[in-house]
Image (tube, rainbow, N blue to C red):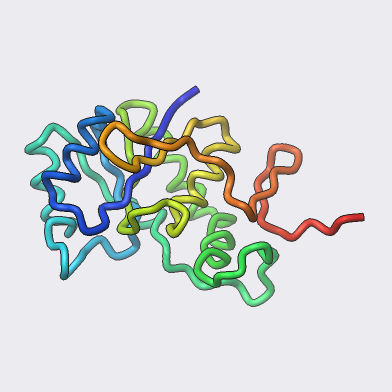
Length: 175
């Protein structure tokens, strides 16, 4: 089984962030922020990361097509999600655009020890959790980096249902 990692940069210094990545031997960071910048934490701007990460032995790429901030469809079938941001991302996951980006991510992760990054410190408050759900369905081990040498294996999110090997976020009616 292949393994992929997730991390949120949060308010950490670049040195702290690099220590976390190093503790799991991460060699590729895939940025999954829709808008890869931060006024408050400029060390996490795309242009900064494209310099600082390679200087520390870590490759960097930005996959905007895995970025969050998606609006839900009017008749979304992903009604197990209460928050529109998660419902919108679940809707987006059904698109060809998402599937192509996910394919690229998996190809990258098969080549190098890879972490996907967004801003939120905890995975359960971030669209990384939905990306982790689909990767888990597809047989990947997903580890969420929580601290130096501390990671949690991804459990499915509470709204996730896996039926016949397919992920959905629909409320399942009980008979």
